Image (tube, rainbow, N blue to C red; front, top):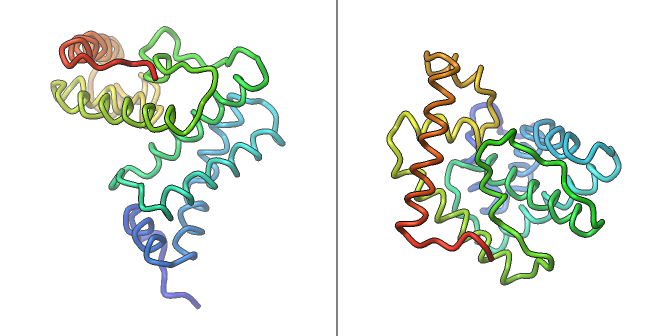
Length: 197
């Protein structure tokens, strides 16, 4: 029997263990998050076989990044993997010349700014930099706005869930999101961040 009690290990600890040579740690990470990641992919693709391919590709990219020592999302493993999955879904639609049906109901979507018809290594690096810049700017928002934005974008929570979690009305949660977007756009302009690779 292995000595792991995966439930007691954080994602960050499992990532570290995997980087240090434990294949078992990766297995726990995949098992812990596979349902949420697969369901996210399948909700966009609506084809089980294609979704399974994209899920596999997502973890190939995760493994490659971890093995190459390029992972620096300490404690934010799931949002990072979800971004990889999201980008692979976008790539899938680009390759098949279909318009992606990825919507955020008129809400802010970081990924709407990222456009390129031919993804390559340089593009991926630039894309990662854009996401890194935006994540840094999110930290500059007032706490109440930052909280709503993170819950919505990174945890994929509904406004009803956000309202319940923050003990405010749905209208207040929506208002905070709106102000967060306005302020984030101002910060993007102030910092002169180019949102296209």
